[in-house]
Every structure is written in C-alpha cells, then in structure tokens.
Image 1 (tube, helix red, strand yellow):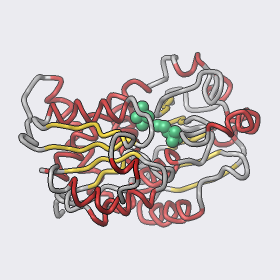
Image 2 (cartoon, helix red, strand yellow):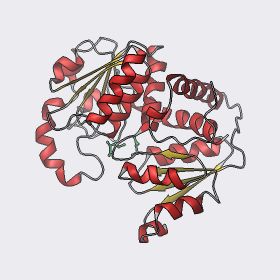
Image 3 (cartoon, protein in one colour):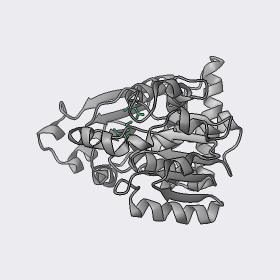
Image 4 (tube, protein in one colour):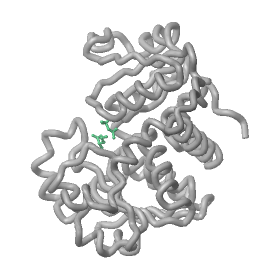
Length: 310
Ligand code: CP
Ligand code: NVA
C-alpha cells in the first residue's frame, strides 16, 4: 500500500479500506506507547494550524495535545481573529498559511470551504467537521468499536436521530470496513442521497450494508453498536424546539437498549443533551463507551497527523 503522506483528509470516501485500517492500526500502537510513556515524536519540529469557525472542546484539545505528544506544535486560530473573518479569501489564507505550517485543520460550515482550502493549500488539510462530514470522529468511532468488540467486519451498527455530518461519516466508515449500518431518522431528516449512494457502493465492495428507516425500534433490534448525536447541530440552533418534537421517538433510552444485543455498546460523539437524544441513565450506564470514544479522538488523530504530515 502506498503511504498517505501529503494527502488531504476531507472525507473517508477518499481513503481505501486498507488505508483506513492502517490509520487505525497506527492509532492503537500510538495509544499503547502513550500509555507506556514511550516517546513517539514522529512530528518533531512540525506545526499544525487549526482554524475554528464553530466552537469545540474535543477537537481542539485532542489535536492540540496530540501534536504536542508527537513533538510538534499546534496553533489555535479562531476565525473571528483571523483576517478570514474580515473577508480575506479562503484561497489566500490557504496559500499564506502553507508558508508557515506543515498541516491545516479546519472546522467550518459549508464543506465547500474545506474543499477550497485544500485546493489552494500546499500542505495537508484535515476536516475537523463541516455541515456535511466529521471524518475524524468516524476514525475514533471505528477505533473504539474495534477495541471494544475485537473486530469490525459484519457488526451491526444502529444510528438513531438526525442524518447529519456525524451520521454521514459513520456511514462511510462503516461501509468501507464491512459493517452493517442502519440509520433511523424521521422522514425529511434522512442522510443525504449522495452519501447514501456512496455508502451503498462501498458496502457492495466490503460486504457491509446500509438500511435507512423511520422505525427506531426495528433499527436497534439485535444491534452490536447503538449510536446517537444531537438533534440540532451547530448552526441549527433556531430549529432546536421544533426538532425536539420531531425527534422525540428516536431518543436512545433503556427501552431501545433492551432490544439490542445484550453486550451492545452505546456511543455518542458528544456533546450530549441528556433527556433529548439520549437518556441520562444510558449515557452514563455500563454499556456506554462515550469517554473512550472521546479519548480515541486523540489517538486516531495522532496516527492521521503522523501519516499525513510525517
Ligand atoms: N465530537 C466533537 O467533535 O466534539 P467537539 O465539538 O467538542 O470538538
Ligand atoms: N452534529 C454535531 C456534532 C458535534 C460534534 C454538530 O455538527 O454540531
């Protein structure tokens, strides 16, 4: 397999199953090294610029600490304090930042912003969440499922709620690696057609499958992994009250958990809203792996950074 050094990471769709597996394998190895306090300064002297146009806890901290553990440095760049916030084109920002840093991570609204940044940057660009995708989250999700279940191929994943950026990346990641994913969402909130069709094509190659339904109970039946995310994503705050009513039947709670496999794990990318998309008892229950999932953001991204920027 050719290396992935120098490439952008905008969506998992641009990566083969072998490449994703290689990132996950390196992530597991680096996690062990970190736990055993074995130095692994794979990016000594390298710098990552991190542009944020939306808030973040996990993405910012996991990238920043991850770069430090790799012997490099990360700069937090709020879009409000960059000239980009005053209208400097993305194109110029990409070209200029490329003269200073060895990689750029960006969290923004339109996915086309990340694509434009990547077009004009001469260093790797990493998508730290757009309205369409959240591929770093999906890497951490797959790493977590593999750790907890010892395998990926053939597992049944049920995602309940909004067919959003997190759902889209989970669909692509699962279908690349041969998992069966069911997305249960109200009509009108299903994953985008373009992502469904990519997922179906991936599943044909990997032996996985995609089911999209409006029946949350059918979705969770016999699932190995239960996953949910917020009902109103960043930028949709004004729809929150309306969405709360529409999504109510999709809450991940004890009733739904009881229909899944007895050893099923509960996942959420966080931040979570207890009593909305997930009940407090399930979020904090023994089947929940949400904190390992959050931790794994850092390990997965360290592997990604080392492979792209090394
Ligand atoms: N899951 C996730 O991306 O969290 P943050 O918004 O805190 O970065
Ligand atoms: N779907 C959520 C994920 C947050 C990490 C959002 O875009 O706000």
